[in-house]
Image (cartoon, rainbow, N blue to C red; front, side):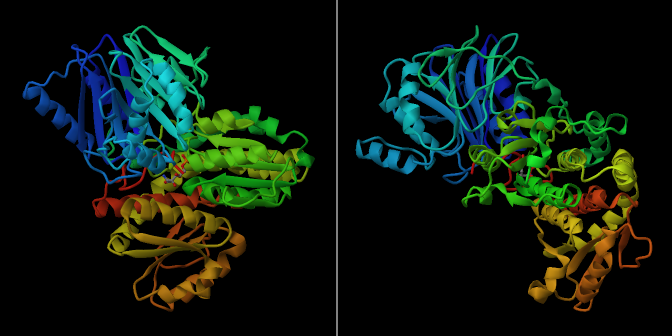
Length: 610
Ligand code: AGP
């Protein structure tokens, strides 16, 4: 998703803007730009297609050619294209026709075509294909000479989502900003004030960070910040607790953040479980608020996107087995696409690392409108989903920089295990020795994750050397193993660009098996003892058609080709171990295929558009 940074204060703005954009690179982008007020009060704009280094080159070239790039107030932006190809002319900041307004934007203006047609008919000349430029042109069209009043009048014309950074030519040194759905933070530092689309760009400067709510706006000057609502009335705000995510985003000795974050999983899961599992007693803290009158919860729905949905696929199985409640895992984008039958007897669990995924946020809002209880499992404090849920259980993964999630995924699983066990305990559907055995397994999990990473790295590398040259691969499993296969398949395709499909093992022979040819890789996950024999049969059906098998199991009696033996753990927790070799497989394949592992093409870390 797009990254936004703004600064006004006593220091030169350009280095702060460029360094801030660097902190936001992990969000994914295809072009970048900045605009700043020069001491003479004019507005300079520089933009470049491609990586941030291209923009840095542009700044250097301009400075060397004598352009005046001093200035202590400006905006920076990394663009993840939604409307209009990645190019310099589509890069932000966008300017209005007469240069009154320069803006940067994250989100989608859904009615931009109608607004653009209206203004073109009035003679306004557009210079880009973006939805964002419409906002700059509309601000100029509705300009009252007072930016705050102009903003107040303009925003209601916009449909869709936005986080906006705005420069008004008549107010050098002043930044304006506004938020609807797309996250936007503002902050006070020693030397001035800043705005940004996420805390990663602000934390190097300050801990005094404020989150704009939907409809809120702010005016930033070197001296301070004024917040105001959609009616223009000033509002007061308290800072948020964003400092918990101050993980110096450094790779250290690792070649990629993803590899570092794979190795951080044992400690991340340990840190996450610790407050939930003190002295082997389950306690969910504020999460318990969503579990009041546990007998009144008749249904659970796990909502999320991508890997977060895969976590929900694990959750629904465990919830049904432990809590005796009908449970489903629904793609957040699909959940919103149909009328839902949920009500006050439904517990909706929204899973989201960033806490800003637009589809998941909108699904949360729909669930709340239907009267459901909402509990979110989120990694970023102060994020929209965390703030808008009835209650939230935070994962303690720390800042996850790689676009492909690993440690956040594993910590989400850990929270799901504790949540389902606690609900089962409260409902009285689970207690005694079986609960004790589960809690013992949960306590042992971080060490088993550590052991698995240590023992399966070499075989996973050997797998990658055999698999990396393929253009297609299949991942199969049953029950929890299928949920793990979904995640293994996504990891492989999103960073190595190998087409991969996850299939319920029993489903393959109902059509897809026709795609198998000699040498087609099939990864089989056989860790759920109750269904291992059947999955083994399915794997043999694949081998009979020439498939090359790669098997994960914790069953020492199995003898499958290219088998990686995983530690035996509680049967309901096996996904946390079986996913690890598949993470390493994906990483190694991507490395062998020389892919951009931490920033895969076309992907963003936080998908804040629908
Ligand atoms: C996973 O590797 C992907 N980066 C992606 O599927 C991600 O899980 C999904 O976009 C959901 O993001 P969230 O957890 O921040 O809501």
